[in-house]
Length: 271
Ligand SMILES: C[S@@+](CC[C@H](N)C(=O)[O-])C[C@H]1O[C@@H](n2cnc3c(N)ncnc32)[C@H](O)[C@@H]1O
Image (cartoon, helix red, strand yellow):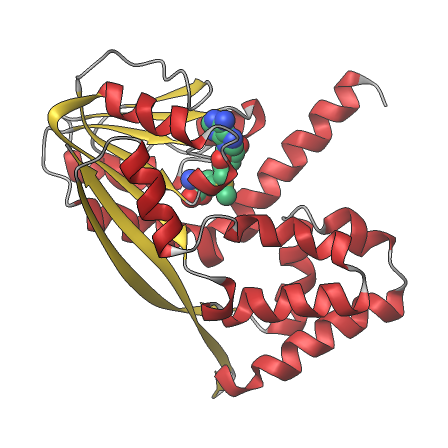
């Protein structure tokens, strides 16, 4: 495959992330993290692993024109999509392609770091947390969202189970990675190792109104690392995944709407 084709694929994935995942699941949780962070007018914010920028874009109007927001992601295609979206009101948002271990912002000048559903994917979690600590002011706060265990998240749990059963565990593992850092004790140990003295950890549940599942599941899968395995499976196996998820989650349907609980840790670290 030529480099230009690879770039196009990467860009397509980022577009799918923005059009499918952000409105349905990641956007509401990015907004919940911004609310949890209790941002104040004039504050300086860095969104680490910003993806297409959902949390940064929710933060900008809250900190207002006297604030500053930076969105940082290692994936250039995510940043391309973030830059191409219409500007939001409030603080100017600067977009950067950079690694979480080497944030392109000066030392001790940030009030709040936002890290929405990203820490679990970072290859060097400890170094990334130490880097977040470097950029915040002495009284600054680092706020992190991480899914609670997959068993607490019926949509993801059912989808991963159905994918493992009908397509294969090697495909299902693509979504399972989002739950690689879900255990509360493990998270606390990591934060202690990074040197945080005060850690406030809460669980937030959002009941999200997903579109009809027989239509949503195949679209959602295309916006995840499970897409290749799913697309290479037979039509019968694909349909079995969709039917299993839709049937299992029928209990969450009422009056033509599906409202499914999703649960995430919300963590604020200081000191
Ligand atoms: C599940 S997405 C979350 C994106 C966004 N925070 C949101 O809530 O929609 C995880 C993001 O982490 C980014 N990421 C992975 N490794 C990274 C690294 N080492 N440094 C910075 N970003 C990274 C990915 O590119 C991806 O955009």
